Every structure is written in C-alpha cells, then in structure tokens.
Image 1: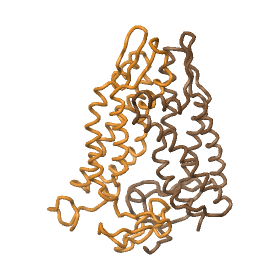
Image 2 (image 1 turned 90 degrees about the vertical axis):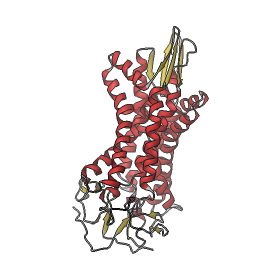
Image 3 (image 1 turned 135 degrees about the horizontal axis):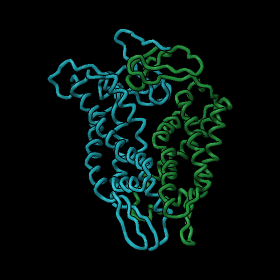
Amino acid sequence: MGRVEDSLVVCGQCGLAHRWQPLQDASQARCTRCDAVLGRSHRLSIQGILALTVAAAAAYLIAISSPLMSLSLRGGAETATLPQAISIAWQGDQQLVAILAGITALLAPAAFIGLRLYVLVPLAAGNKPPGFAWCVRALHQAARWNMVEVFTVGVLLSLVRLAGLAETTPGPGLFALGAMTVLFASIESAGLKHLWWQVR
Amino acid sequence: MSAAADDGSAVYLGCESCGLVSRDLVGDDPALVQHCPRCGHVLHGTKPFSLQRTWACVVAAAVLYVPANVLPVMETTSALQRDEHTLLGGIHELWLDGSWGLAIIVFIASIAVPVLKIAVLALLAWTAQRRPDWRRLERARLYRLIETVGHWSMLDVYVVVLLAATVRFGPLASVSAGAGLLSFAAVVVLTLLATWSFDPRLIWRDPPATPNRRDGRLA
C-alpha cells in the first residue's frame, strides 16, 4: 500500500503534484505547469445530482420509446425510434456500425444513468453501496463512450437534410434527447472523484 | 489557488478513478503494480505501452481513412436513379444545395476532426520520443483539444443510420449504408482509442539521461 498524501492533488494531465487549497465559489483551480483544470468549486449537493439523474432517467425512457422523427412521402409515413434505427442498421448488413451506435447512443447513456442511480441513492442516505469502487470505474468508461450530444445533433442534421425531400416532423424523442444532453452536461460537470469524498 | 508542491525527490501518483494521491513506490519497474489504497484502481506513473498503442491505432486509422473516403458511405434510391455518396461528395452536394452552414458542420465533423486527430496524435507520439522539450504547453493544449472534440466525428455515422431508418419507401425512395461507412466508423473508434492510449504525462517527461537509447528509457 502506498503512503497516502491527503493534502495533495495530482494533475491528471501532466502528473504534477499540487497542494490543496480551498476554492472560492464559482472558481476553478488550474495546473501551474500545463494549465489543465485541477478542480472546480461545486454547488450541487449529492441530492441535487440525484435529482438531475432521475430527470435524465425519465428523459432517457422517453428518448428510446418514442419516435425521433417522422417522414411522410406521397401518403406513406415512416417513423423511427432509436432502437428501431439500430435494428434497421443491423438488418441492413451493418452489424458492426449497429453495435457501435448501440453502445454509444443506447448502452453508455443507460449505464451513465443506471450506475449513478445505484450509487447516489444509498449515498444520499449516507451509506456506501456494495461494489462502489467498481461502479465509479465503470462510470468513467460510460462517460467516455456516451455520445448522446453528438447523436442529438445527428437527428437534427437528418431532419434538415430530409426537409427538402419530404415532409418531416420532429418527434417527442428528439426533445427528450435535447433534455438529456443538457442534463448529462450538468451531471458530468460535478465530476466523479468527488463521490469518494462522501464515503470518508 | 493551488501551489505546486515541490517535495524533493518524492514522486506522487494521483488515482485516475478517485483522485487520491499516493507516493510512487514502484518507479519504472514494469514487473511491479501499485494499487490505490482507497479504491483499488491500478496506479501508473505513465500508462503502460502508451506510445506503442497510440502508434498502432494511429497507423490503422490512417490506413482505413483511405477506404472511408473513397468508398460510398451512403446509397440512395429514388424513382429515377440510384446514387452513391462519398463523405466529400455528400458535403459537396450540401454546399451546392445552398446549405452552407450544414456543409461546414459536416465538413468539420467528418473531415477536419479525424484528420486533426490523426495528425496531432502522430505529432504528439513522435515528439514524445524525439523532441521531448519542444513547446510542451502547446502540445498539452493540443492533446486536450482532440480529447474534447473527439466524439464529434461520429456525427456522419449517426446521420446515415438515421436516414436509412426513416427513408424506407421501397423503390420510391430509400437510403442504405454504403461500404465506406464501416471504414469510417472504424477510423472514429481507432482515433478515440489512440487518444485514450496516449499518456499526456509523456509530454512533460525530461529527456532521457542516455540519449543513445532509442526507446528513451533507462534499463
């Protein structure tokens, strides 16, 4: 076991060690060598992040179950939900692309929300859930692979590209994706390392 | 704010998962592994095989970038004709249609971001080996830039998947993914993996004491 240095923080980008000093509200500390952000002062409590996560879970359920957009052409109409789009790509002999889209737009966001709920509900009550360390590591990976914001812009772009060809209507799924993008950004801004401060 | 802690020869390792700082006990010995005492995550002075993995992914991405641009990423069928669209061709069509804003967005996401990532990672990996003390702060900023924009090259993959899912009117109008889409998706994933394999701490490593050793590490 290494000797723990409680008064230090190491820059994740360049590895330089700094001494902790309390941050003023709405300020951030930067590495003196490589200028990367070392830490921000947070306003969100665990309960606050939990509330945002519950909202994101509701938006996620709407985003995957309702149509993202619908397209009508000479009397015929087609709608597509996110799981449908992925299964159509799978059937169209693009299995690897379907897997990639499934991971980045469907599974990673689900893990991002689900693991946070699993961790935050006990933490809000003051308990440490079993498998906490594993969950935080998995959350780092989920955040890496989550591309909901890119997917949302992809839906918008498809709508605009089709607008000249046929009658297009944005579906409720698109608005839910937009809400998810904003909620994910505010949840992520709180970071993951601070979760460990709650279990001291 | 925070002041740099200059504590003689001691080397500190920050846990990537929980942020706890420990003293480095194993140094550069690859046979020993140190774990974070709080969360059990492996602690590294630098990521293992960082440059080898980065080079492997960058070279593979550069090779696959050729079919990704030459082969069509999308095929459209309408009542009159069947068309194949490459990445650049699609951007050119958008531009001709007068959708300049869209053409610029797609150009940045599909052409500029992948090329930037491949070029920057090759530069970072090369300078980490050969020119360790050249413009360190700028290189650190470049790395953070490609880390931030990396996801956006997935944009065209999503657009093709969505168009294929909605434009399904049989012979009247339909869209399907082309052979180039898989290569392009592979380029996106490989550049992401290359970005994550590269260790930005290598930018700040001092020149090796024995410059005649090619891998820049002391035995």
